[in-house]
Image (tube, rainbow, N blue to C red; front, side, top):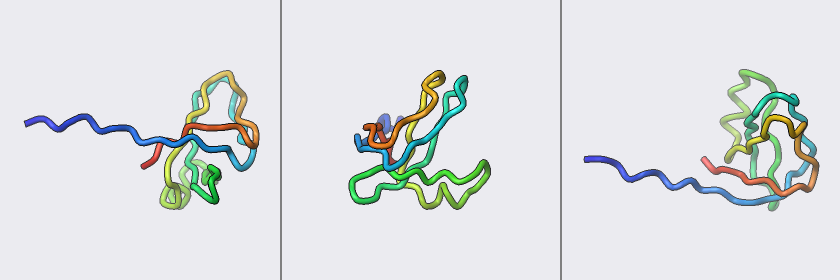
Length: 78
């Protein structure tokens, strides 16, 4: 028997603070949901604690340079 495809749960929220990204890298950042905003939870590469505190993640496409504070982001929930 096959499992049904998992539905991706997401929510659009403003980002609480600016997040920068390397210009040529497609990046994923963990976030927490706090008072109706997406708060970056990423601390450092390999920091498992930031993942355990996160409610989901956002994607930052290559070439964007980052996301500004207050910009609406699509949070994919865990």
